Structures are given as C-alpha cells and as structure tokens.
Length: 233
Image 1 (spheres, rainbow, N blue to C red):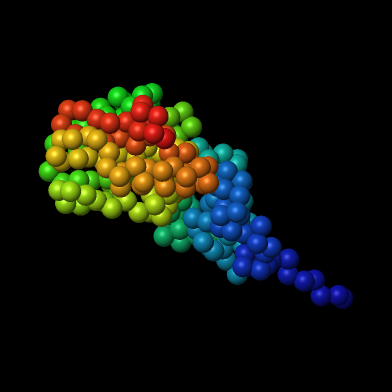
Image 2: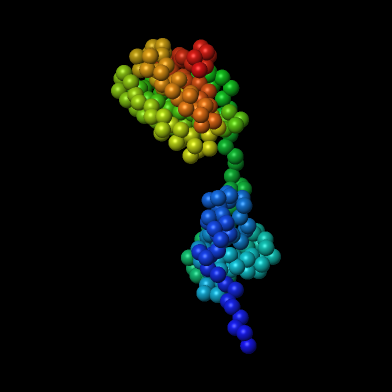
C-alpha cells in the first residue's frame, strides 16, 4: 500500500503570500479571512493542524459567526486541541476589543478651512510660550486633523526643524497633507530669512513625496503670519 503523505505543512513552509502575518504586511489586514486573523492571535496550531486550520475549526463550531464565537468562555475554547489558556484569553480579548470598537464614538476631528483655523488650534498650545517650538499639523484627505506633533523646541531666538523627522511622522500617520507652525516668543510674526528658506525646502520635499505642505504659520502675541495667505508658498 502506498504511503499517504501528511497534508499538513507548518505555516513557515507556506508560500509567503499565504502566511497570515506576511499577507497582512503585504496586502493589509482587510485581505485576511476571519480564520487567518485568529491564526495570528494564537500563533501556532498543533502537531497535525496548522493555526489557520485550527482557527477554521473553531469558527465552524460557531457557525462561522464572530458574534457567536465571542460568547465562548476560556473553558469552552480550551476544548479545542491546540488551544490553551493563553490562546483562549487572546481570542476573547480580541473579540471584546472588536465589540468595544463598534460601540466607540468616532472622533469629531476638526476640519481646517483657513489659516485662522490653524491659529485657533495652536494658539492655546504655543501662543504664550516663552520658548520657540516647531509643530506640524497632520491632515487627512478631507483636511481634518489627524494629530499635531512637536518636532522641536529651542531657545528664545530659534528652533530646528528636521525635514526627515517631519515627513517620517507624516508617513507613519498616513497624513495626506501637513501644515507647519512655530511661534516667535518676541511677539513679532514677521518671517526671518531662515523661516522663508525652511518653508521653501519643506514645500519642495512635500511636493516630491506627494504630501503637500499647505501652509506655515508663525504665531506671536494674539496674531499670526500665514505663508499661504501672503502667497509665500
């Protein structure tokens, strides 16, 4: 009688596109099936069953329904060979986070429509500071604020803004555009030669990376200078 080969192959021996972690990195989490996502959570299967196959079996027991799966407790999940307490807790915690995510309210992100909006956003942050600080405002496609990040803080007369750090932060936060902002503790909002040179440098870098720099604000005492309003961008 011919020997029947074992159909099980460890995940590490699969084609890279078929490995859940690698697939997520290459194609994004949306490309993974429910079973593949659970396989990432549990990390490994058993000697005769891959993590993905084990995850499929667990899902099948709940009619391939994540809501039904979320009703299982640790003891019930441990009945599946290959699922210990730690793996069971990981599955339950992930499903609980999913339930809480659905119940969470979406952030009411501020939309930037003018330089005045940017001034109002930053006035309370650096308007009264006695030290010069440089910030970036990261925006999405709808010009809504993703977050602001302090790039540097200097002395009374100046600060340093590293272009590499600025665009690294923009890329990591999936920003589609950015706005620059720094303060002048002296109260004067007139741009210095260095301000003008830096703005041009960052605008050119943003154009190359397809992350446009929309404006650069200098904030003083209850007033501001906008490079965009002054046609300096």
